[in-house]
Structures are given as structure tokens and as C-alpha cells.
Image (cartoon, rainbow, N blue to C red):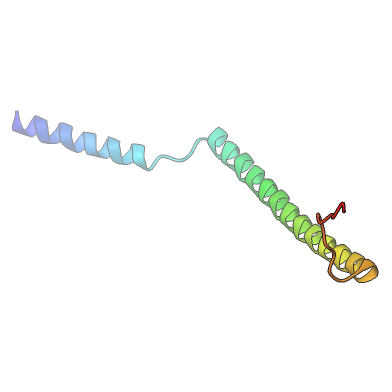
Length: 83
């Protein structure tokens, strides 16, 4: 009985080791590759959006600066004295 238990336990450990070290299925590796490609594409889109936002912010500052130089350095926005 003791020998049978050790044999079964050894067989179980071997099977468990084989299960843990099994190779990945082809469809799983393909799915992982597709998801990684999608992540890379989205990261590139986010990077481009951040660069565009930086460009537009600088452009807005430049236009505001140019406008203020043309029409007065210190505009009083929102101050209206009706009297």
C-alpha cells in the first residue's frame, strides 16, 4: 500500500510538471500577438494625440500673444462700464 501511494504520488508530480511546462497553443499565441499589436497601435495614437495637443496649445499661445501685441498688451476681458 505504501509503495503504491509513492508510485501514484510520483506519477502525479510528473504529470503536474508536464502540465505546467506544456507549450502554448497556436491560437493563444496568435491572440496574444494580435492584442500586443493593438496595444502598440493605440499607444502610437495616444502619443500622436499628445503631440498634437502640445502643438495646438503652443499655437494658441502664439496667436494670443500676436493678437495682444496688435491690439494692446493688457486686454481687459469682461470689464464693461455701461455708465
